[in-house]
Image (spheres, one colour):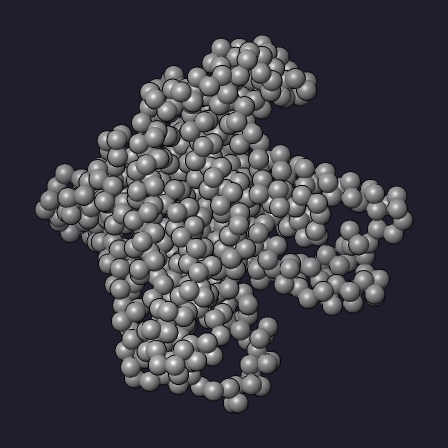
Length: 284
Length: 310
């Protein structure tokens, strides 16, 4: 944009810039806009193919949301997801925060290799592990229970969060800990009372990140869970609400939108840290 | 980037002096995470390899060693090769599109403008929303009767009154639809990663190029793309891993149909192993995903090492 010399050229380049961005925004956001419109349309309006689908041809209605909240198990699924999310966040914090500190400060030369190794386990996908897991979950008697998810989800949240925490801890100046230890704190005391509070932004990041991953997980929940009352949102909606030939599109779109938007807004605040974590290992 | 400095400073810099107590504490702090990862990633992975060489099904409890029988059966199965081809087409086409579009979008987002945070939020939506739910939005967009795409095309006069594409019901269109949704989903991730790379180029370089009278294209080809190349490769590698191993989009949109024309390795492994109950074959199919992952990991490590050396 800095190449435009004359005002006319500058205006043209600005307009081109606007067009490019507008095209991309339409592509990325249109499905969500479409969910929003559909949620509040009456079924009669949805199935009338002769009217303009972009407009409300009949007055907007809350019927679809009423069906979603009172005639399906949607609320149950949201609560299941939040419960699993909360416990997985606790487990992830307990494992990843000390491990990240250990890799950042206490493990000398082999720390970096080990850290990269841990990060790479994040790349082993659920699609390779779900079959053995289905057996393991059976051995432990956890089939069809939310506890199976609570057990398995940290296997992908811990590697990435350990890696992120290591990055955050490395950014804390060493002098601060050394000063705290001079004042009589042990190494662990310095970690717990000084370094952890200083890294609260990092901890918040991995909380959000873990929650997002739990919300998005699909394959394990689809494999382990069979009764509808134990579903999480990401599996309950596509398997239980999308059934047979009768689709309740209004309720379905509402179900997707209500979960997606809050996560999107939360995540938006943390995306830069997330990207830094993704690229720190590979590119300086 | 840090190497000239660190190489010069290395002899002066204090070696981290770790006492024995520190090292022991370090091990204790690291052990729980390592044990968890070993038990819940390492062990299932080994188990998966074992199953692929056995006759495991959902019902039987006495496993027998079956050698390479499962693999022999798989490579004789036309569906497997079809899924392999679909997986490769799906991954390559979508990732080429993602990198090109991601680069364009990152450049458009590079300069500040009013309302940038809102634009960024809207562009991030597909990556942030749960994949299965976002894909249901597309299921409705591709609906055979009420497809908004068809309605719009017809209203604009782009398709005649006799054509009515069934997006998820015709083999070619189904594959196009799946690629489209995958591009939609991974474009935001690639964009933010490339944007981070662009922001890492020092302003001096842009200024120097400007002073030398480099035009837009010259600047793009000689400065912008070469300097962002490593980070674009990172975005590409993550995209490849996420696409190659994904089954959610296929599961929600087509369940592999019509006639397995959109079946990919991950979804085939799922349908064979879980609803089909043949754990051994499912495990064997899913292990075909592994060589590619190894290749990606080696590339990532090479890039990391090169970034340290230069």
